[in-house]
Length: 242
Ligand SMILES: [Zn+2]
Image (tube, rainbow, N blue to C red; front, side, top):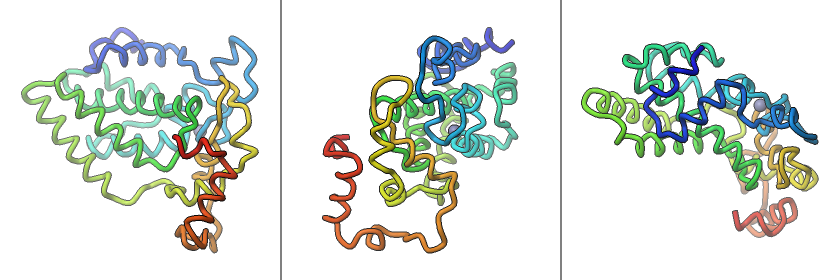
């Protein structure tokens, strides 16, 4: 029911197409890809649940937290499912900037998920996605004028302020990623297409760190050389080229 109004959302054309695919459950998540051909692994790159459209963009722990940022910026309870997000699209004149934010968030998530899946990018916390969201929305400012542009700038200022606050998800640091990612997992099949799956580094964020888990790189590794050696053995020399 929300498909026709997608085209009114103030985003670049490629994002309109993305939203249309998402709204029709045609985004090529692993479970959707599995409807077309065999896929070894249909689990989410952020956790161990099945990677459906609903899960990847709404239900997973990562988007769930990211949606809370948008809700706080605009002082509305956006919700964390497609229906609750898309219902705001109907009042796009009133919520033009917020709808642009929510579309940009989903687009950011999808782009980063693809980088994890196909380029071996490693999850290091929500701040990376939020800063990407910030830069993306800044580049979309040319789509807005007058009062809408003011609203967008105010929302961007709030987002910028949030970027300076502590992260809300566990497992933000590189140390966690290095420590808990095994070479066995990184060399396993992605399920979707050939490539490395650094999913363990992301999946750790849903796990509780042990009470005695070291909190700094110097606790984890006695020297930079030791850390480099550990990372190289886990990821291979190609890690440093990322
Ligand atoms: Zn997930």
